[in-house]
Structure formats: structure tokens, C-alpha cells
Length: 156
Image 1 (cartoon, one colour):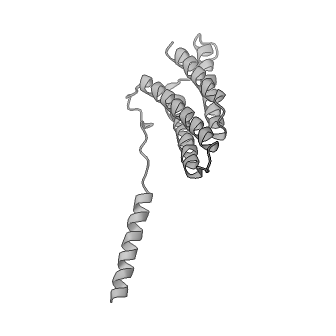
Image 2: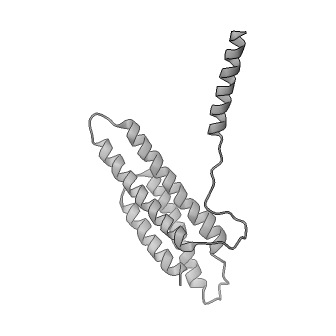
Image 3: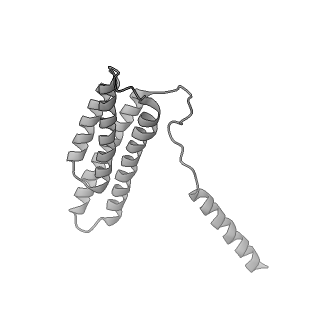
């Protein structure tokens, strides 16, 4: 009887652990045409993600130079850098590309600005991917420049 109770307790603990690991992530905005948009907040979030990626890169470099090895902390900073690069890419794709940037006709006066917006967003996606691959701080400066340029084109 005691062994059966221990098995039940072990099964319950396992289910609790599994249930805790199978949570869904809630994102900041949906793709339902609700009309609730906060463009300036999204642009600010991209800037915050960029700053966090930069800090992560600097920590990875600094910890890599210390003795003894700080491999656990390095791994944590690498994961942090990747999560923020993914979050930045998600804002670009799910918010701006999917919902906010509207296609225009090639003969429209707005077409040149539309292409500028798309180009800057695509470059931001590629640069965020490069941030995941390296600790090269030049990618951070490029992200900031792209964000400034996109903001100017978007708010035009």
C-alpha cells in the first residue's frame, strides 16, 4: 500500500512539473483587427530589446575573459540575448509587417516611403539574426540606426 501511495505521489509531482513546463506565452498584441495600436510603445520596445541585446553581448565578452570559467553565466546571457533578438523580430513581423504597414500601388506617391519602411524592417530582421550569431557590437549600432530611420519613415 505504501509503495502504491509513493507511486501516486510521484505521478502527481511529475504532472505538476509537466504542467508548469507547458505554458503558453502571451504576446503583447494579437492579429485580430481590434484597432488598438500603440506604435510608439512598439518602437520603444524595439529600442529596449536592442539595449538588452547590447548588455548581453558585453556580459558574454566580459565573462569569457575571466578565470575561472563562468560558463553557466555565459549560457544565461547567450539565452537572454537570443530571447530579446527573437522578441525584436516578433515585433517587426507580427506587429509592423503583418498589421501596420499597408501595401501601396507602385504608381502611388507613398510607394517610395513604403519600400523604405519594408527595407528597414527587413534589415532589422537580418541584423537581429546577426546579433544572435555574434557578440559584434556593430550590429547594435546598425539596429539603432535602422530603428531611427524606420521611425522617421513610418511616422511620415
